[in-house]
Length: 195
Image (tube, rainbow, N blue to C red):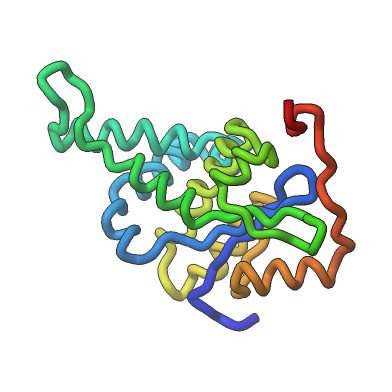
């Protein structure tokens, strides 16, 4: 296995789709390191079974909780007690931006941004919430690892998520899917048909 800085995550998603996620940049990590490490610590405090069993399903919720705690520590509240400087929505938006869905289409796999996949009915908000939790879990483990261990930690975390690490670009990864499995378009469901 070649050591690379490209720790792109590929996760299976229902209906033959794959989520392709490019990790956050070092700069983004440095902006959010405190809350990212707090999420990892909060999950690990309850033991390895909790961290690996529940963590992939709730990491995004823990991130929101830790973001509020971080804002409170920085006294980032208005006069009514509402959070005014919670940085977690920025981090979650970046994770969303860095994620594409590869969905089978008439001409092979199509790369679809998350918002478009939701609006097209390929996934719903609950599907995204589950995927977001897995991506936050991956981010909290891969980005906090030492550089020398990052590939191994990323691969181990991906396996907990039933995914894999790839150095391929999204387009090259989609092409590799087309050669490794027959592409069949996702059938239209009653909810996705025009009214």
